[in-house]
Image (cartoon, helix red, strand yellow):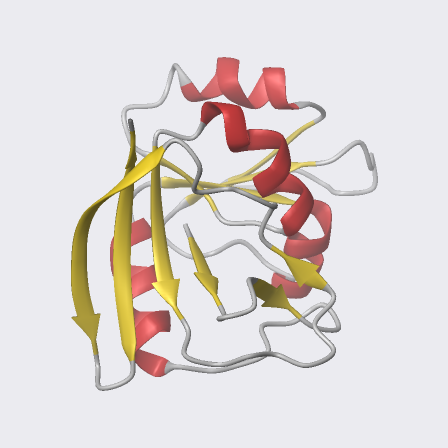
Length: 153
């Protein structure tokens, strides 16, 4: 799951380079009661677990302390193995390196198309991330955004 600009940017200076309340609400409603997996940098920008979700941080940094609703795993194989025991969906929520690592395992992309070109962006979706996927659903999100779901072919 990602919000992606017209130039495939997803971050600038460790933050989202935009703020759309409708997208934040959509993200919260879609991921609540499910599991989310993120990398260390995304975890550090959040600073605390997302409420009402199982938060999984993929990191070799042993300084991240597990806590209630937070699991720290060292490699993608551990995340994939752990996810088999879940009775919920697992949403990969970034950042760029995590999207790249999970690319062969992703079954569905839920992409918010952000109608901006972000100058100076430093985090991007992986090159060709939608190759092998087909558009399954499109819906409007507020006046400016569209959410497109892509399914693996």
